[in-house]
Image (cartoon, rainbow, N blue to C red; front, side, top):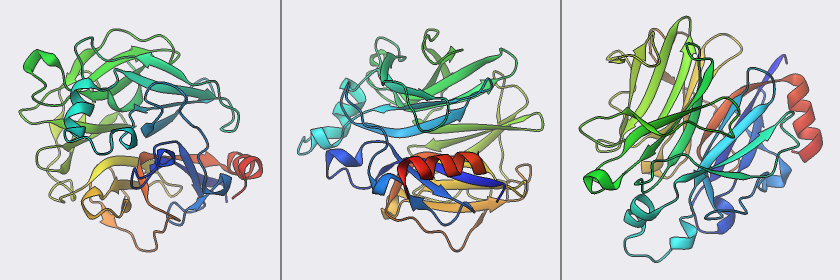
Length: 301
C-alpha cells in the first residue's frame, strides 16, 4: 500500500458533548474505514463554545498540517426553542485552529475571530492554496446583521500561517443561502462544490481563476440529489476522485461517489462503503504509508 486515507470528522447525533469533537478514522482503500484512538476524540475543544464541528484538514506546502473547525455546540443549546436561529445570529465569530507536523502531536487549540464584526456565525471553515497570491484562502459561511441575518453567504480571509488573517470579505453570494463550500485544484482548474441551503442540494462550479468568475457545471451528475451537505473531495491512488457527501436528510452520515475524471463530473455511487459509526461533516485526505503507520501506532486502531 503506497497510499492510505485519513477521515477527520465529528460524530452523529449531538446527544452528548463528546459528539461535537474531532475524530480520526483511517482507510487503506477510501471505502472501509476504521476508528483510531478507541473511537474516542483525538482533539477536544477546551475554548469558545467547547464544541467543534465541520473539521477541515489541509496539508501545508512547506510541510505539516493545519486543522480548522466550527466553534459550535448544539448539545449546549438542547431544549432551546430557537436553537438554529440562535446559532446563526448569536453564534461564534471564531474558528478553532490546530497545527501539526506529523498528525500525532498537535499545537494547543487557538480561537481566531475571522468573521466580520456583525456576523452571527462562522460555519464550516475550509482552506485552499491560492496559487496567484501564494497564500491560503480560508472561507466559511456567515449570516450578518447587515440584512437582518436573512441568508448565509460564503466569506473569506487570507493567511500564510493560520495565525494571522486578513479582514473578512464576501466571496460567494447567491439569491439563496449557501454553505459548506469545498474547493479542489486540478490541471489548471478550480472545482468548487457548494450546498444550496434552500434546495438542500450540492452544486459544482469551475473556474481557472480562484478569484474570478465561476460557472456552474451542469454535467455534475449529483446536482439533483436532495439531502446532502458537507462535500469532501479526495484524489485516489488511481488518479480518480472520491466525493464524500453527508446524507443528513437520512441521518445515515457519509456516502461515497467516484469519478475517474473531474472534468466529466460524472460521479457514481460506490458499493462496499462502511464506517464504524456515523461520520458527520469532515475532510478526507490522502496520507502516506508512513503517516498511516505513525497514526495507528500512536493512537491504536
